[in-house]
Length: 305
Image (cartoon, rainbow, N blue to C red):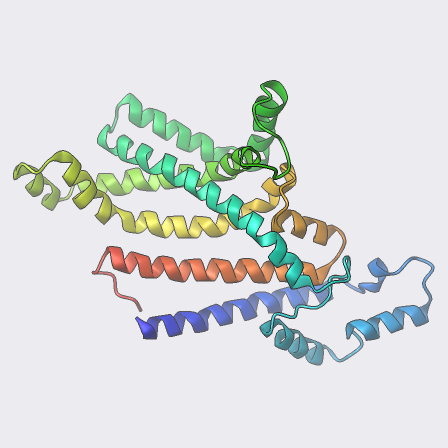
């Protein structure tokens, strides 16, 4: 286990380095940042002074090494828009995104797993058709479109829930459900498929022939063995939820890193964009490592390589 964790930690470092390298290259491809940071009437002297202050007058390889060295210590640089350290700004907004993503994931799991199990137990019945229909709709409908529909129905027409902001738990319901719809559909389908595969195995028929209660067969022998692909998918979907939060936070004016990233892109605030990417990459990598360990605990036949 310790060897596996050491290898995965090294892989996390390599992944983060690769992401930061890509972002550094994109920053250079975007051109001269002084065009966005200085007024149109700025002189050439003022432009050169700003480049010197930002360290952009040095050779490219020196800039790259300095960038990675500073990033390793959490110093991504000053936000060009706010004139403050970029990473603390992201850390301040990150809990709101984590709350939204975990709430969306909780909604997805609590809805999808029971539906998937029920669809597997009632295969080829109206229950299975209903659950499959929900899965198709959840995967086919874009999150921004479903978000606008929910706002129109529950906020504008019925006036049950707020359409924007983060004041109170009611403001979390619409963005969490909207963000979790696609994930719910995916988890429901993999739950149904995994349960059908497990319940059709010979050992399940043998246990059922011994007269073991059906609920014991379902949860002890069925769901536990079917849980490995479900847990793996949930781990992958959490990373997707963090990425999908960009659209949802913009639609619902949720004060998280997604909305912060959109504003940073519009203002060409590259240190802020890089800080957001760094936090999302670290979170996604750590979640994947945790999911791999959890899958091995659920199924001892899995070897951590």
